Length: 433
Image (tube, rainbow, N blue to C red; front, top):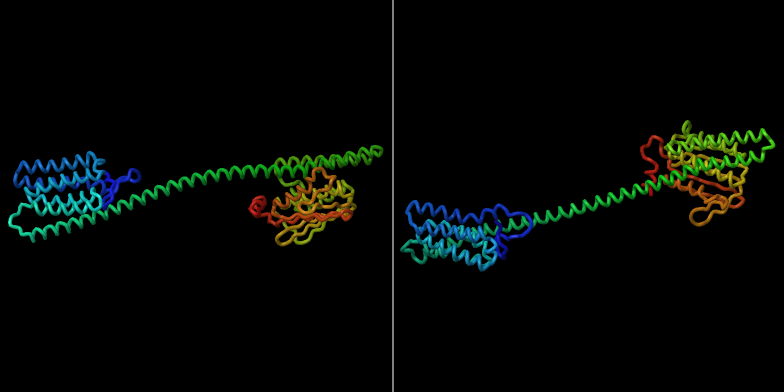
């Protein structure tokens, strides 16, 4: 049973929110107890039909108005009518037997629980007056009756204070629970929104991963298969020009065979995402020496490698990046530079490792500002772009120095990530970005 909506100290009904408190479930039943107990005691002492009828009427009236039709007493006039009839019945019972005075607290509670604001105090005063005036005791002086009224009013005020305190606590509890429920609902909505955002982020991360893998494969194909096929085409063209010299043509064809086999190995390695063949059995300096030696033999251009600092094993992707930059730079020299000599320098420093590739060829004019452009003869300019992407992917720095007739210098600086570290360079670059 919930209390009614009203302006006053009593409980307040809400149509939604938490269910009724223990006090809300108890107070509607108190009149039954405070009427039935004195009625039973009085009837045992002196059986009277009017006592039984009045006690039954008071309890039935309370049940009919509060228990069976609680929505009726939400209206103030109906609540006043209910209270007046109940008080009249209690007053009649008190006039029969003073033991029914104990029913007064139940009426006080009903006054504070059902009547609006100042009407509740008027109901308390009326109840106290009825209890004092209707007691069947002769010979009481006006002073004694006044004293009894004041005592009854004091008791009623104390009961009202208790009822009001309980009602305020219940209302505060209802508000707090409703706020907690609302906060919980908002948190659930935020959690669902966060889950949706996380799902979107994961989707975008997967898309970015796919794009990054496509770019990596493009660089791998360009730096391995495309370079090998270019070299093969060059050797075939040279062999065609040397057809009159069988020995020279055969040497060219042997070179073609070697290049084709190396390209096939690189193609398989790219598919299987393994380390480059030159790095499979050696460290970076030896791999660069092998690559530059084979390139020099195939192109006829002198090359040299100088290593400074203490050479040490680096993370696989660091070594792969520098090896690919060297291969691409050498390929560009063979195709565009018309150089007579190329110098490679690998410098191991405390935090970074630097690869410099310099030639004495024709050079070109980079496009300022922004990314330097590849020579016009390089189809699509993908070689320089590929080298830059590889280096910046490791949060490194890529620089080009060139001028027409003054040769070209390429410098790639990348973090010297140790070989035993568990951090993937790709992860490092994404964090740096």
